[in-house]
Image 1 (cartoon, one colour):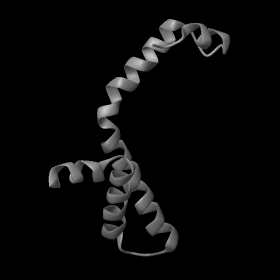
Image 2 (spheres, rainbow, N blue to C red; image 1 turned 90 degrees about the vertical axis):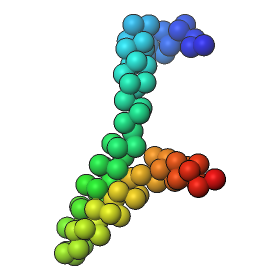
Image 3 (tube, rainbow, N blue to C red; image 1 turned 90 degrees about the horizontal axis):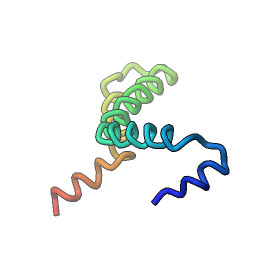
Image 4 (cartoon, one colour; image 1 turned 45 degrees about the vertical axis):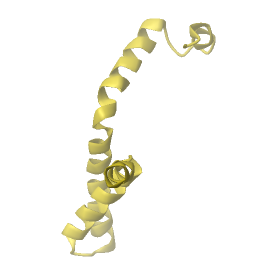
Length: 82
């Protein structure tokens, strides 16, 4: 259970704000893998541009893997493989 009195004492927000925030986080959590992979692609491309490399495909794949593995993609593969 959430201690709403503790929330109020810290002046973090009202119970309604807490409920809205929790509902939004609950709704987007299934997309976190895709969000992390998209951020990974952008970071991979940024690293290729920053280093002056021209292998953009490698940067995209690297970003997909890093973003995916940081958000639980490895556990998904591990579960499939046994």
